[in-house]
Length: 541
Ligand SMILES: Cc1cc2nc3c(=O)[nH]c(=O)nc-3n(C[C@H](O)[C@H](O)[C@H](O)COP(=O)(O)OP(=O)(O)OC[C@H]3O[C@@H](n4cnc5c(N)ncnc54)[C@H](O)[C@@H]3O)c2cc1C
Image (cartoon, rainbow, N blue to C red; front, side, top):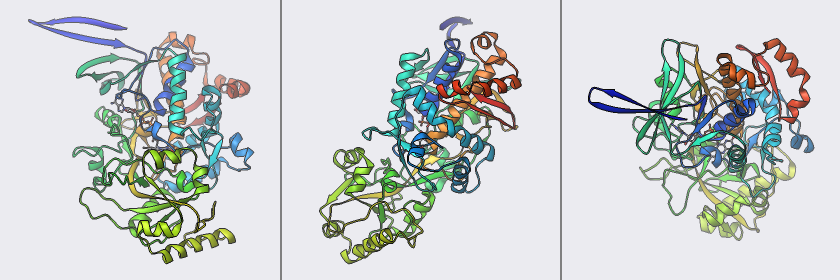
């Protein structure tokens, strides 16, 4: 609904145009789309929901994701005899996060993941039965599309956005950048926002906002968040889209939101070095799955130097210690080689050929002798490296880098693929402080009424370092929680919404009882989520 009101001030005619919505979601990546559809699911058509995206299409960094999404205790895991559970997952994430994770958020995250697989498969019809093990995980739990021609991020985004576009009343504005959140200071309550489209500024009044605007992994400006919190990374490349400017973090901070872990920025060990454009700042990610299916890392001397399945910061540090920093002041680039054989390339899936033939990142060599000539590596040295690796494979021993999983053996006389990689800024663990209701917390320690956050814009779940596959999962778990909390918040203040929203508006205890009784319905709808926390009981039904 567009309302145009005309106000006369003296001789000046100011046009003040505004629109009204119930709920506005800022950012159309996985967190935003999940939150939008979940809000719709909970309220049918009774809410006016708007999603605002600054780009001309949906997806953000989510659609770039290639390795997979972590779930717990799923049907594909069980079929493959993978024994996973809450404790294993919680502890892996805590260890990777150097125990800096917010324990309440991590607990909520770990519980939510147990239902997320069913949610995405039942509600959106996604088919993600392939399971792999990424660095830092003690078991295989990273799921990717069963049809290997699809890539996880793009696949999820297209399935969810199709459902939103075809089956919901959610309105989407593209090319529209939110520039300001409107908050009533006295009541500490959100009441709207300003956004810009084609240099025109517009106002929206609304009851609640969910911020899902992603991270700040490409905010390299002099006044940007990277320079403010981690200036030592300013000269690094990045795998993020240049829309990742942390605008949601800044919008929140402007109105008093608290920030956490802002100096915790993940550098991914493997960004592809493009032979045609070697020192470009924007790198394509060389997905962790390349190592997950058995790829190994060697330096310019042909030596291995780490457990390729270690956590990202461990592998990054090992690369920085063992591989040559390129002699350029354009960029901080530490290059090494990632090597794979043909079996690994097949297991990786069709996308391997995209990197090799379409992007030109991967070079094929007839055998190791040819490779050593092409890469200028001493053959005897690389032969020794490969023999040691094969020995560990044959004897099923833990090698000197503590690697325990050896999926495929190398054959010195067979085809080999090489790619040059370098560590690149990849993910920002810091962001808006939230509680496990996804309410954004102010610097005064209290939730800002009507403001919720989910996905990379928030901080606290991952602590000091994020495990691969956990970010998409975080978008799903907290996208759903943010939607639930926003709907509950609006229902408290608006009878119309209470009427149309099935289970809202009845007492918490009664909700608990019902939640127990309707287990089957939860399953059908893709999973229920019942628990309690410091802030009361919560339900995702
Ligand atoms: C190359 C790459 C590969 C990855 N692979 C994996 C993986 O395999 N598994 C995994 O778990 N994680 C992976 N990640 C991390 C993961 O993809 C992201 O952290 C996650 O998708 C973030 O989702 P989001 O919804 O929070 O933000 P995004 O998906 O980044 O979406 C945020 C959206 O908000 C919009 N926006 C920002 N500011 C505004 C504004 N002011 N107004 C309007 N719109 C705005 C942006 O344009 C963007 O579209 C990968 C990341 C990258 C870069």
